[in-house]
Structure formats: C-alpha cells, structure tokens
Image (cartoon, rainbow over all chains, first blue to last red; front, top):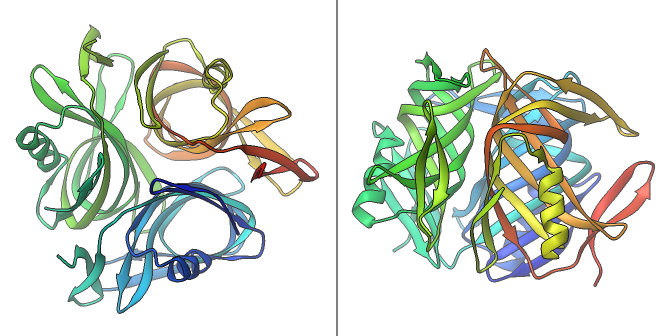
Length: 140
Length: 140
Length: 140
C-alpha cells in the first residue's frame, strides 16, 4: 500500500496486488490511530473474496474466487473492542459484468485498489445492541 | 436517527430501525436548513422499498419488500418548491446477493443506515425543464 | 455542463443531455488544470455506453445502447502522459433494474449526471507497470 495523499482529513491510499483487504486498511488505521473515518470511494479488483448478507441474526457468507471488478466501496472506520473496525459494503462485477455484492469480510487485491477516505476528528465506536449487531455510535 | 459527527461541512448520520428513508433525512434537512448537500456514502439495510426507473417521461416503479442490503447510496439535497428534496440512487443486494437498483423513492430502515453527507454553502435548486424532469441548478 | 459549486476542494458539476462522458469531465480538468481528484458520487443516465472488464492483460469491452440509470460512479483523476486521465467504475441499471457495470470508457449523457468531485493539492500520475496496467502514483 501507499498513501498517495493525506491532508485536511482527506486521504487517498493505493493498495497493491497480493495485499489482504480490508485487513491492510485496518492495520494502517491502527498504526496511524485513525478511529473515525468514512470510505467514500474504492475501485480496483479483488479475488478470493468473502462477502456476506445479514439475515437479521447472522451473516450468510459466500466465497467469490475469480478476480472481480470493484464497482463501489462505501463504509466507515470505528473502534470496536479497542481495535479499528472497517465496515464496508461492496459491489462486484463478474466476468459477464453482472453485479453481486454485500458486506465485505475479506479479499486479496488482484491488481489495485484506489481508496478515498474521509478522516474525522470524532470518536466513532461500535456498540453491541443484541445478537451480532453492533451499531455505529459516538463516545460523547 | 442520530448525528454522529458534523464539522466543516462533513456530516455522518445513523438512521435506525423503523425510520422512513429518505423522508427522515429530508425532515432533518428542513429542520437544520440544509439546502445544498451531497450523499457520498450510505450502507445498511432497507425493507418495503420503492425504487424507480426514469423512462424519459416518467418513473416506472417497483416495490421490493424483503430486507435488502444497501451496497451504495449516492445523490444530493437541493431545494424544490421551497422544500429540501433528496435525490438518491441506490444499489440493493437481495438474498442471493444479486444486485438491483434505481432511483430511491422510499423505504423503511430494517437495521441501520450509516450515511455520509457533504454539506455545501451553496443554493442548489430543482428547476422544471419539461415533463417530470427537474434539473439540478443554482440560484446564482 | 455547469459547475454548480466549487469551494475548498469540493466541486459539484452537472453534465447535460448529449454530452460525452467522461470526456467532457477530462476536458474540463485540462482547462481548469485539475491534476488530482476523486469522484465520490455521480448519478444520472447514460446511453451508448462502452464499459470494460480487465482480464489481467487487457479490457474486454461491451456496448450498452439503451439509456441506463447510473447508480454509482467512483474513481479518480490523475495525469497520464501529460493529460488528465479519468478512471471511473460505474454501476448501471437496465430497464428491469438489474445491475451491470465495470470500467467506464465512454457514454453519452441521456438526461443528466450530477457529479461530486474532491479536488486535491497533489500530483497524481499514472505510471506504466507492465502490460496495459498503469498504477496510480504520486510524483513526490
């Protein structure tokens, strides 16, 4: 990964082939003490993707092995049990350009990801609500 | 709903289960006198969704009842006939993680929506152009 | 096209019926000397669209003639061989609201596009890596 720009709470990061995503982003957030941020753009390609759908109680997961184009990434960074937690939803195009998507658990960058973050001077946290659902909240 | 962060024209709002969306957002804009904004991220879940497709003259509408993951929300807030008007396009994943989408008329939050707004010091308005099409413009 | 707002590195542009996209955006970037930017939202409609999928060596291209709703646009602007280069991924909904998408090569605005740009004080460039892949990088 390489941070291409970081100024006034606006950050552009390039992730490179073979990197785990969003794990690499979460690790960077920990190192840089980023506690509150939004992902407002992210395009590129992923392979060996694990995505999920929340059924109201838990996530049904699915594996997508082939390289897929990332059409959109949206989400946020907050603190969950003391660690930066990246919550992302992804739209993926397959070989026929058909689109599927869901909650992004993990994947491997297969070409590049060009990501845009808004960093906030805030205290976003995940608070357990019941079952497996943790709502986004603030400390104050 | 809860405003989690609002500073320097960047706002993060959490919408909660049972709230109408984007109606609740439009009402907040009216209360807070937000006249010009962009929606640059929004993930979560909706049910009882009404989405539409513009056929050049009018909207063909479709109802999606089951809870669907919101993969992306993009759009803007402007003033239309004196009231804040929220123009949003949505991508939705169904139980099989297949994706459909269009213009979002309305839905009910079924879990949460985590929304990111950019608020502008501008005068965005909707101006009738012909038929049912109102273009985004500025007063100045 | 009309620039509806441009302040503090945040820009909203409306593109109008019949304009080539993203060509018109690239031309505006050249005129305004915009070298580094991110596209964080873009909704509207396109027709005669050429989209592609990167197969690891080259792009497989597909033409979508009918007017399609743009559900999301994400990407960035950088300099490639001395000219502003717009890298965009798009999600498109067809008449049945089914979604397809990929890398956006070109299209014609069929109604409007409402675009949100973040402009950066940076030096984004495209650097050839091998084959047809040019990675996003910075001069410094």
